[in-house]
Length: 190
Ligand SMILES: [Ca+2]
Ligand SMILES: [Ca+2]
Image (tube, rainbow, N blue to C red; front, side, top):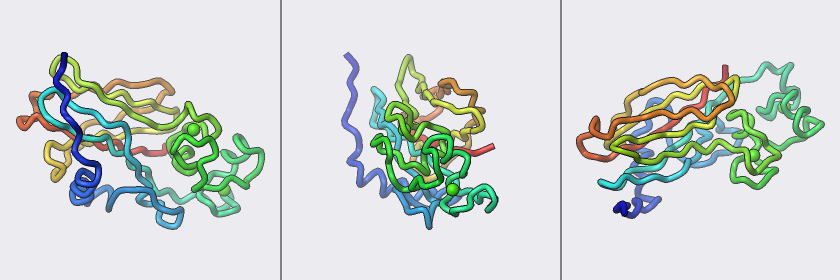
């Protein structure tokens, strides 16, 4: 049986993450629509058999919609609001399906805001010395994968182009001498 150790206490890990995010994120946690440039959340935790690794942090982009496509200026594309809600009255920071992901995050990730089974939740497991990261993708989105062994320096790994399927991305643990590995996935709208 695998020896999976306990995760770092969340507060400590988040504190560490916040110091290592400079270039593409200024901190962690949910923010209001007014500060959506840092609209981030935390994905599923994972651990390796060697040593505690981390959470996958998801970075949501800040986008400027054409005002004619967002007449209520709520950051949600009006046609997307009409598609799912039948009007443009959707509330960006509401979680209409109760899946822990706000409507704005669902829009940015290309997931269904009215289905709790649909949310952006990348997962990671260790298998034969490899981390296998499964990224549920949407058409019209790209996903930049960043990795860090120490939560301080982050290295860009790869850009995945969404096609509606779950894409598996692999990382050889031997590339990280410490045995630790942390991940961030940045969502881009095409
Ligand atoms: Ca709108
Ligand atoms: Ca959902």
